[in-house]
Image 1 (cartoon, rainbow, N blue to C red):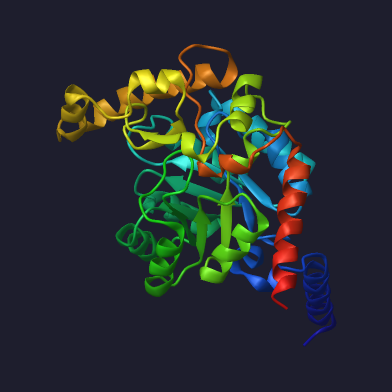
Image 2: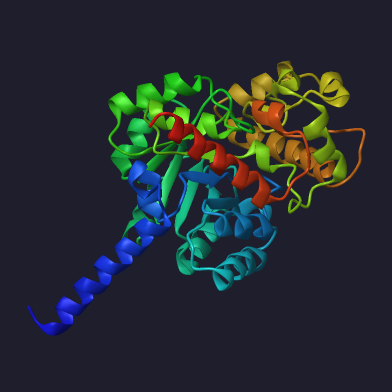
Length: 349
């Protein structure tokens, strides 16, 4: 073995030791090992909410984060956001990509993410085969949203690096299976890491999903009312004023079940699709176009409510809203969560 090889080996071991010293939770779970982060948490990509300020704050405080590609209207805006974060830090972050046919920007988004080499892509609402195939040669990890075992098995066979297990307590597009049941089911039948998504607002909840077998957690709702979010003060105040009992599911806004705060307008609108909507959603010929139209109409309503006062108020959130009691900085929310997590671990030692 020549001198240069020995030097490289020593440097690699020193770097590994440095990371392990700085990241005390590296050995506790796969997500930390995969991404080189201190805590097994992804600040979840939230439509209209996640922004570069939130991502940078998350990376500064020991976790990773992702944002939806759809939060940017043009490819140049998406590129600028990625470059802004990359120029700020070398720490890993990801982008959420809608991969089904209802997303006309899918191809362009994928090309941009591949070119700019984001650390990971979270795929949602479609077949991730093309994403996985193109990311693997570049070393970009692919985490796939799943809500059940059959789809988890499918994406594992396709080569996904991890599944994001979207359970019945998730905000936004939630699943139907409770957190423990979903994690246990996937853990017994899959061989790739499981990242639990839904219902986590405290450090003890994070420890619990890890104890059930998850490799980490994707957490969204508790970050909605952060100082860095550019949403309206009304939305942030609603996160404080409403609680878990006020979260309902509606299938009238995106073609899939969406969890929202049960505001007077949502009550007026109703949460179940009418007969025409049901027929459009279930007709093989019209289904694709119906979903596109419903999603466009629904997301426009969500967008208007997120950034300005309107009587047509549609605010997305999950049951974790119960523990949102004030507007705080991303740093404060993360420090509280991770401190509680450390304390929960210490109690078991």
